[in-house]
Length: 552
Image (cartoon, rainbow, N blue to C red):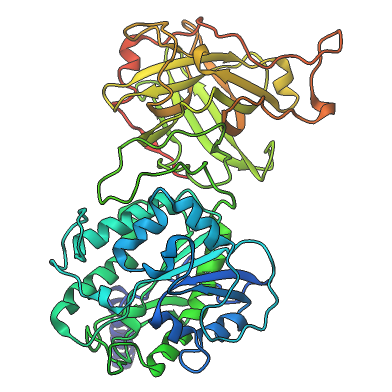
């Protein structure tokens, strides 16, 4: 028999359980742990760094002021710097925001960068205890002085070219700088924002611009690498509780806690020693984070030969990439999306059971750590592709064609190498069809394809016309279709996809080079076939239906 005490305990337990349910379903959400590793340890070897600055940077570096030079040395950075009077044409005199185009986006950029990368001297009073590790500077810090915080315009003005210190022109200039930085992933570029001033007239604009640099600049430009970073020197100097630092294993960026003007001023707007020491304390661990992130996620070599640019003008560059001289890497499939793309994207005929995958695979590379694995199961009379789309189009007229290394799960697999010109909806398709030879099933073989061996797709206007637009390449891909009423299933791997200069593709190891019966090396340029043809109605869907995107 159930007594009153049992009923009471049952009700009490029920109420307790209900309270627990309410708490866990409506209580405050817990922050998800960050998935990005934060490594504040110094580099394990001396790294050469150079700082472009004027008087504020000099004070920050000096032992008796901000102590930055000594602190960076303690973190294994060999520090050099420029100042007034430095460099070719006295370029060191010019560090206002509009001058950065002269440094990084002008006709003399290569000459200035050569001098900058090879500078090992001191132009400020800080102690260096590390021995010069030789070689080029790997980290380039650059900063404008406090007058550059006096920006005209409005806080939310979009990027637009101009001639004055305005929010819109400053945004435009920094967007332009990325066009150089992206060609030098082997260098780490760090923007140090201009320090604040005491006059509040332009403080809202300065705050908005510097916050844009930290939070939006790289994101808005879809910048793919980790070789560009920002330290908000401005923000750190606007209040005791404004920070840009590493705190509790995460990057902490706290703004607008006190003011938008100088909190650590001197009589002439130079930051005080107290403010500079605060900046040093916050910057050094953050620099270590930026360094390790760059080392882990960015290619270690320049991507393309740098082309001389016209004299500095605040005008938009043509919407086509500069011509590539000789040969250059298109993709080595090591996990970073090629410049100007969103990575390899796959398309297929969704009206059929066709499937395709296109992803890097470690352990199967010809060189490096990974190659691109393309696995396909194409239904009869259907199609699939794995494609890089370029925006803006690429000018590859300085090269003679394409080269890559090929491996296949078996021989007689058929695929196309595709080239595209023109915008989406008006694309022209040029093909080269390959049937995998027996040698490719036993290991890697080199492929060389000259531009004139690609021909316009039969289903398009002027079918069969040779490819003659290497200066207008809007895409490149690997396509899979079928013989009539036959499926096409298999796996291939490609690696070291490059533009071909006058030099031949590097040979594979001697023991792996297939030979003819007379001992001569076999040529790897495979015949262009036309047995495979996609129905025109099917191909028309190719650029209209994006089924899934894979971003490396």
